[in-house]
Amino acid sequence: MSRRLFAVIIALCVLGSIFLVLRKPITRQAVEQPFLKPIMTFVVQKTKIKQDTILQQIRAVQDGLHEAKLSEETESIAWVKKTTIAFNAMHALYDYVSKDTVRREIIDELRKDPETIPLTQKILTNNTWARKMYGKDQAVARVYAISVLEREAEENGPRILHDTAQSLSAVLARNEQISKGEKADLEDLLYAYAKQESPEAMMANFPRFVAKLTVHPNTASAIRDGFYFGLMGRVKNQEQMRQMILWHVR
Image (cartoon, rainbow, N blue to C red):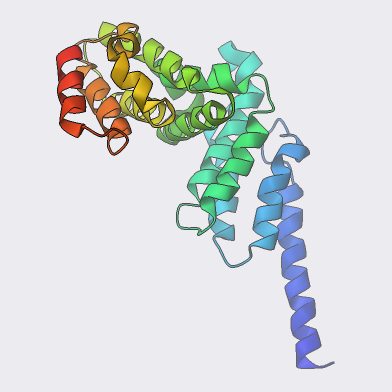
C-alpha cells in the first residue's frame, strides 16, 4: 500500500471520527440535529481551525446545565441548552477569518425558533434569570444576545434594539448598583440602534429617541456613549451632535 493511499485512509478515519463525535448526544435532552448541522458542517469542512476548541465548548454544556438547577423554568431548558451551544460555538470562532459569516448562519438558525427573540431580550433585561440559566456562560450569552437582536433588526427594523434598551434602562435605574457588564449591554444596544436608525431622523428629533429611555445616574453615561459612538461619522456636524446628546441626556 502506497504512503499516499495510507495517508488518505488515515485522514478519512479522522474526519469520520469527528463526525461521529458530533452526532453523539451532547446533553441529557438531545438538541435537534437540524440545529447542529451548521456547526457539524463547519467543523468537518474547515479542518484547519479550532476543531478541538469547539468540541470542548459543546461538551462543556453538559457540565454547566443541570435539570435540577433549572426546574423552575422547564419551558426554557431546551432553548437555553441550544443557545448555550450556539453562543459558545460563536465565541470559539473569534480568530477565524470567516467568523462573521458563520456566526450569522448560526444566528439565523436560532431566529427560526419563535422563543428566540423574547428570551434573548430576557437574557439582557433579567440578570438574575440569565445567571441562573447560563451560570459561568452568562457573560458570553449577553454578548451574543445583542448579536441576535442586531441581526433581527437588520431584517425587521431597529425598533427591537430600542425596545430592549428601554426595558434594560428601566431595570438598571431601579438597582442600587449595576455591573460594568450591564452598563456595557445598554451602551451596546443603543450603539447598534444608532448605527441602524436614520441619522437625519435622530438629529431632527432627538428628544423622541430619548424620551422612553430611563435616564438616571446608573444609565446616563451608557445612553450618551451608545448614541454618540453610534452616530459618530454618520452626521456632518459632530460637535452639534455631541452637544445635543449632552443636553438631552443629563
